Length: 316
Image 1 (cartoon, rainbow, N blue to C red):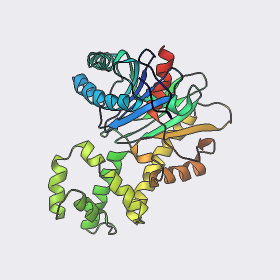
Image 2: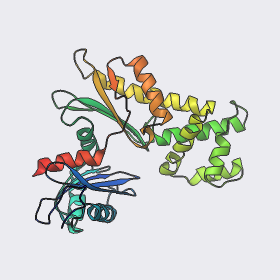
Image 3: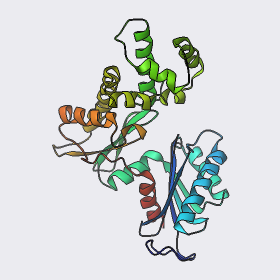
Image 4: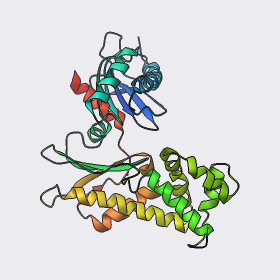
């Protein structure tokens, strides 16, 4: 099959690789060759691994992989797929998801790893550094020069995840409630939260929170970021506090790096995309309190499916 003139040619007999990133709210698949060149890409809804949900995750991945393969002008199954999956921290989950992906005809050989391993490969290749992830939750990982991994945060919405989406949403709800009662300064957060869910009154919001899931509360975070971007003082204060929490994860992990050399910092997760007020606040926090931290000037988040593709190349 001949590719378009501006894209590397891939023949059916050639090795076709997939790099797959399976998150809680987002799935991305890149198609590549043995040189790690990206030939096609597609994105779709979340496919994070949940107990007993391997087939459901594989169905989402199949749809996204088909669209990426069409763009790359190749056919499935691919020769091999490297999958970075949220929720696949234990061997049984990884094995179940790998089997489901192979059974769905996505790839002949499937290797499932934790999403953080793939993200580290995308951010630093094999070099040391610290990766901060702020999405629904928050977590940071460090890989030191000896190849060891160290973790801070990421304990879930009930135990922590400070600075993540649920934490931001919960803080916004609390600020709205306290402003309603006159306990704190007024803000536009209550109105923004009501509009976000098509609600009319504060009592409607109370009823909504009674059944809201952690994911639904975390989905309020973009409204907080938008409010901060537009100059809402209370929202800006919440975002600044979130940056302090994320900065503390970095400071804990810097203890594992000997010497005085700068430490590369990378970001991932929906709350730390370029232009995010949280990314701006984090940059200021690290500059003030973590002199060894070196967050890239572009602030571009890591491209996890490309990291997965790099690891897929190593498979063969």
